Image (cartoon, rainbow, N blue to C red; front, side, top):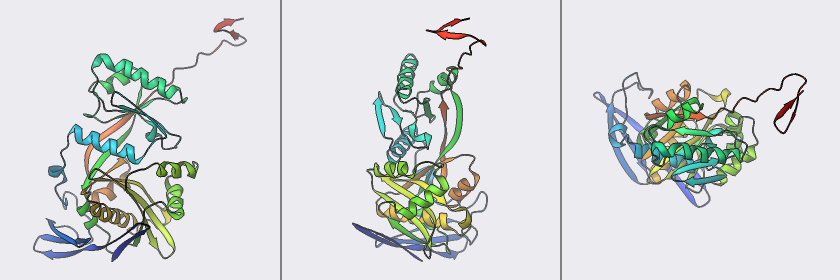
Length: 336
């Protein structure tokens, strides 16, 4: 099946990889923009579903250094692909505010180096920033990319640990190779269509104002593709990719509950991977909740492997002192 991208200013067309079995190897042949390449992998189920411990397509771990520098670079690419309304850079720390119900967009990226004696003052600066928006302060903690003592220091200050996340990476060619052979067609657009936004908001909008997401997407300045898996006139699933310095980040993956099981999400990922390759982005990355088993299975089956785990620390507001029954307060003094 051929997947076509159509939007003002560019056109893209590529063919799904073809599979040919030879001995215990699968020969994958992919064609994109007149270029072709071949990859050999270990054998796996003909349906394209990996068996446990088998079919690790590509050698992502050997091609992508699992270093703090790489982790930091990917997390900052993700921040640019999910741009907050207001960002202040303080000594390498990103202080971000957003009205989006996706609260992780409005967290601190504490990626600048800080000695132990600098942590408390920097945390206080972040707390004042968020207090100005009447928000709790949240830190995104990526081990190795953040100051070594930050997580423990926040814990001592009463910050709550939450949200175990997985940062995953893959080779774009491998993700494209794991396309669902019988999946639906995929349409690519340069900007989000109303149909794309409707599916995303239905699945992942958290009941918020759709205009907030429109505004966020309008702030993305890097090249982007919006994929819609379609069957007839129905959009089954959506996703988007953002290219930034040789990497393509995957965001906004959403499949309507009633259309699951048709290979739509795999088709969306494969189409985005083909687009990424055409944009000279050989690597792909995404962020997913570690306990989201259906999503993790999907990404594992399409070539993604975990680079690292990360989590969040959220400020716990101090308890409000209660006045004794019948008392009145004036200028902080309790009067009976």
